[in-house]
Amino acid sequence: MKHHRLFLFLLLPWLLGGCLHPLPPYEPPIQRAAVQKVRTTAYTQSESDHLRYGARTAIGTPLRHGVVNSAAADWARWPCGTIFRIRATGEIYEVDDYGFALSGRNTIDLYKPSKREMRAWGVRRVTIEILHWGNPWKSYRKMICVRSYRHIRRMMNEIKSWFHTPPPEPVFPAGGICPIPLQTSL
Picture 1 (cartoon, rainbow, N blue to C red):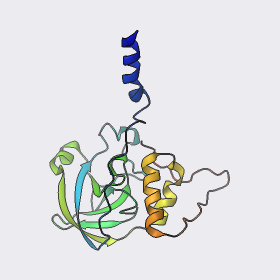
Picture 2 (picture 1 turned 180 degrees about the horizontal axis):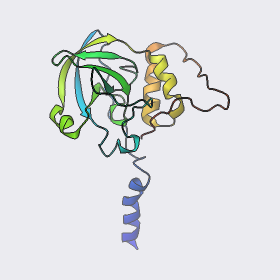
Picture 3 (picture 1 turned 60 degrees about the horizontal axis):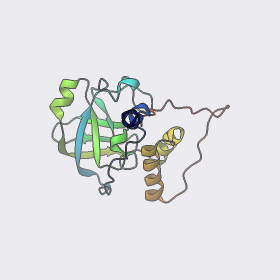
């Protein structure tokens, strides 16, 4: 009987889909500047934790690779719509995605179209030039529909604390349905 309880205890977090995972350790934000040295990682749509979203971003648009590439970040540090260039490669990215592991972190995750390219990138510290800052309140509004997730609340609370103005009220169409198909990962 003891073994059955132990088995259930060990199986419970898996059954709950990872709900019990702690948030990533919080890092104090780096200074908001036109040029920043940041830690970057890479991701692709065929990773196991991204399969359920396919080749879609948190805002429901297709992941991009080409002239402008998709990137995921904590939207309190790099709001959705932030466009930057990596100095060493000249690649241009737009923040249009987020992820659980990025919440409260000074890391930007760069979209790569294949696992081979993702692995080749690895983890790098790079200098980025911000070409356009996204709007934190637009990011806040895009997260309203999924605010029940801890990592989303962390980003929303940081936006509120950084910008010291009340968040704008969301405007939903008739029926009160969230107009943006957002990613709902844990």
